[in-house]
Image 1: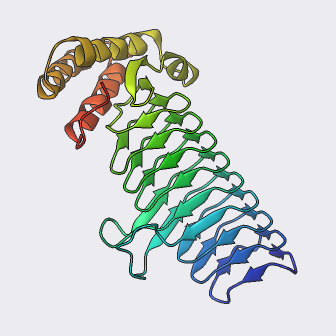
Image 2 (image 1 turned 180 degrees about the vertical axis):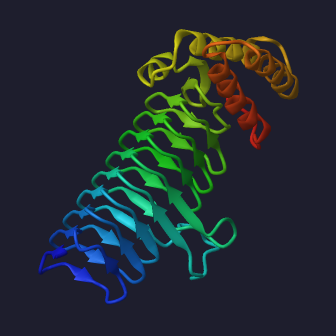
Length: 269
């Protein structure tokens, strides 16, 4: 049976899997769904209209699914969706979406979200990311799979951070960060690719070298963004024709080129 501490408050419309644990003083609001084996710690508040998947762990004093911090919000029904296997540490705040955008804030699977992180309305977070302590995302931000955001990183609204990208501690992101790129500073500047992260995820030397060369094309080739995308597409086509892990390298460049094709705020330089 569901383990709910006697001091917790659970709205009658909430749906909890029978294996869920709810700690002392927690509050589970209306239209909340919580999946199997998820543990919600003491004094967590899951406000409303929130779906939480399986095998998540939410630590004390987190605020999950609160109203968006947007002055245009006028009480419309909006949502927060959280996937499976996430760790959400103390005092994290995750807000629902707004009707002016996608109406929902989404967080994928197996993310590690450390203490005091804020994820604003309408953000889309992929899977396997790490957000170190006190990182803040403005509204409408997108973060790709396997990204790593160093402690106290600050991300401006509407920015995109690509898969496998990395921000150093205290980075202020005002423009889009392409996949694989490491950035730091206020404001953020690019400092190469996230080589160590790629190695840890099993990228071969050939794939990493292809990404490194793509970085040179993008940042040192003297090309416009559109010219750089065209050069990356050409190199992608060449790799597709090669043997071995060249096809994987081609897919890596496709990920980068596709991201660059969606840039709306310019890229970190």
